[in-house]
Length: 305
Image (cartoon, rainbow, N blue to C red; front, side, top):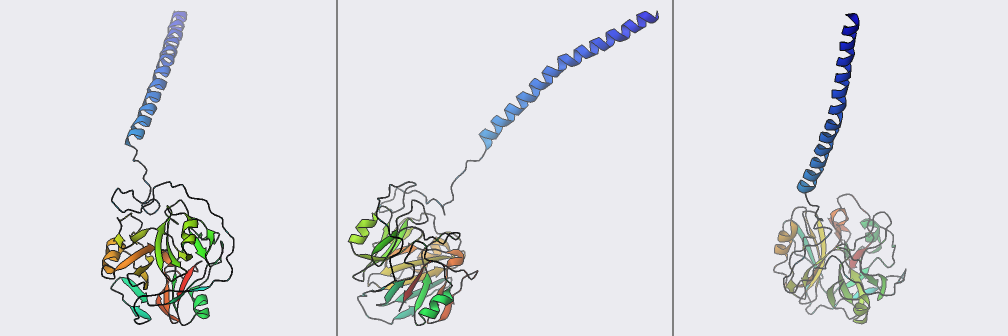
């Protein structure tokens, strides 16, 4: 009798073990199916990654658009590391008015310069960074503003850059460095984007260039909004039909619409977006007009006197 009971207990254990063995593959299979299903669901429901408009301007098919595509073949051009001591260029305005005129509106600082002599401080690939006070000390009786973008880690200047009629940085195939405001030897000014080869601009008399973002107005035509002007502080440079030079800074949250409304009656022929955010700063005759948010040193200033 004892032996029979022992046999039953052993048989029960064997049966239980067999059932467990049978259940194990089934459980593993269910776990695998759940994992595969979760993966498929994630792939189907995962939001698509989109590039920020600040980094990649929105494409447009509108006529006269100068918005650069995501990839442009940039014409090669010989660069120099240093263009020598920065020189002045005399801008020739068609009509004589007051040298510097404050045309600011709420949220947008605007100064017009008539017949100014212009100096671009950056003259090399790595020009060094300077505080506004450093430039004011050298040129106290001037209108001064930050201009071109630069790499904050290396100090290297970004995009199309010429000084003294020499190229020291070619176009950059990014939204940062794809547009430029050029002052020519004869005192005229133009707006360009990276589809115009550097050598062509220099052959046309390009002497100084200032750039960072996109072109908002080209040859008197307002171009489609490419998304590069957002809620941040932005600096701009432009010229009007009489070839007066305009230095402009828009406050936080003014954006594209507010900026374009502020300049609507200025008859601007070209308007180019420059470096912004903490880099934006302006002074006149040694007095601060617009202070950098974080006291930032920058690599390129425009000086008008």
